[in-house]
Length: 116
Image: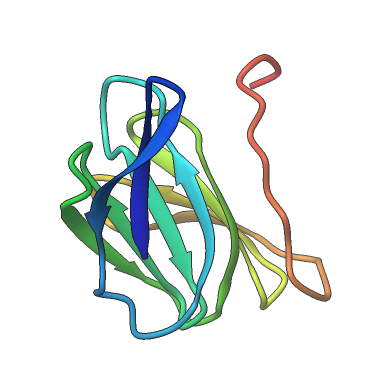
């Protein structure tokens, strides 16, 4: 995966990441100052977190393909997956702290901070 940044109206190559074994299904950028800067959800169920220089911080593992991902805050993020579950993850603990079931197929998640 190539990472670009926008400078003076032009995209310039910033970094390259070749650590993924399967396809990247989703990416979310954290625009806050704290916590990981980027989360990438992978087809094999892995979730990679990266710092602002796009260096890997941590790998989280799940049993199904990640279909969508979003930050809640610097301590939590949420994923939708192909097994029909929505999972709330702890950034620091590296695990699912709550799971929501009931969907049949892949789930798309989006967190709206205005409604909590």
